[in-house]
View 1: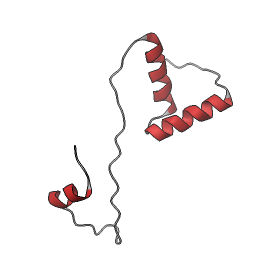
View 2: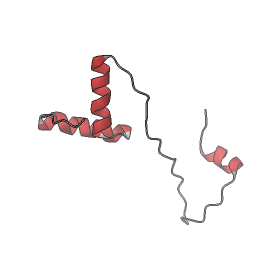
View 3: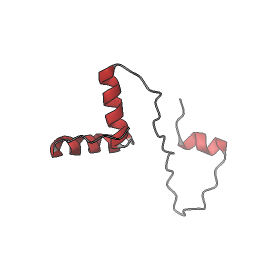
View 4: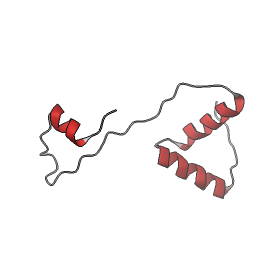
Length: 75
């Protein structure tokens, strides 16, 4: 269902900043807040961003599993 909510500018800026910092949309953050308030839970759908590996020659990075494990720490 679509609805309209008036949010003060300062609060919206903080909301948008937090959503961007978490890698979520404002909509996802608002829905999470509503679910918390109502005591309902929804399956987390957090976007995962792949790690960025710097290279002096982009597109020419030759990696195998051993090299990946050297660069990225895994749990």
